[in-house]
Image (cartoon, rainbow, N blue to C red; front, side, top):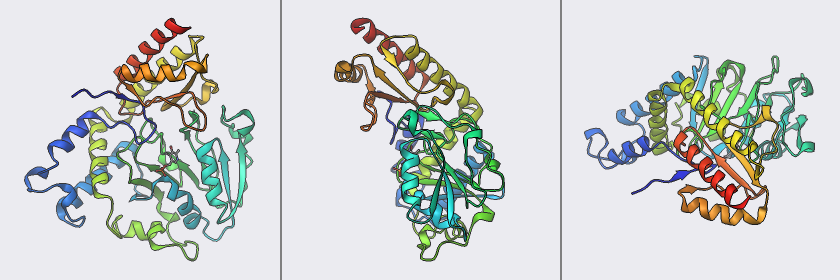
Length: 360
Ligand SMILES: *Cc1c(COP(=O)(O)O)cnc(C)c1O
């Protein structure tokens, strides 16, 4: 068996040590004679797994006690509708910052429930920059301010947390959670689909300040009500138990690596060396402003797009998988989440430089 380097944007690479542990425990979870997948979510065994996963995430992110951690389903996309349903709380308007494709999807969904005020957009420069704090036109009557700290498709990442005064800040951290430290107390709510930096698809993590629970829009389904989920310990119905278990293994793995501070240093190095390889070679380019370049998703284009197909074929032959850019933008994209080892980035850079020498 040879595992290749996986640069997929999502579902994406998982740490090999996590997959090995899951494999080893698959048939007989810790001597109980059955798989964790086959257990009741209400059994003491599964509840201990679930509680440990939550505690490890709380430790990793230093989540204050007045925040609930919810383990939900439906992906980040279902949060696009749950957010207005739960957070309008008697108001009729919300602020959204538009920095790309995922922001737009969140805006489109929220528009079904409220008046969306676009507090800022960088669409005019084709989403190659993030707005500055001074450029945000925030409405003091907004129920909340929503933004996407890391835009996965164009590789655009905020280098600051917007200041929103008393209006709760809501962040779609799907592709940046756990990649670097964040001060959770600055947010009303953080959410993330698991399949980038947490675990397998099918699990969504929500971190929400407890004063924001309750008072949902009329007609909100019980399963979409954060208070119902919080009161039931994320077990109002059967949760995605195997995803929750695997997320727990990833949290433990991250602790074993030294936690978020340690992985931050690795992530910084991985991103810096890949961007500098791109910037220092005429054959490759990335259009994003330097202060707004994502650490997790690194898009780049070849000087000659006719070579895209050959680049991808040869990369795959060299064991470098899933490098095509998103279908909406083309080119290439290397997603270098926590679980992509630094060796993988080194191998990618070596391949890119050799390809450029041959064809440049
Ligand atoms: C992947 C992604 C989503 C969509 O997640 P689903 O789980 O497919 O709904 C939303 N926002 C961002 C920033 C993403 O990277």
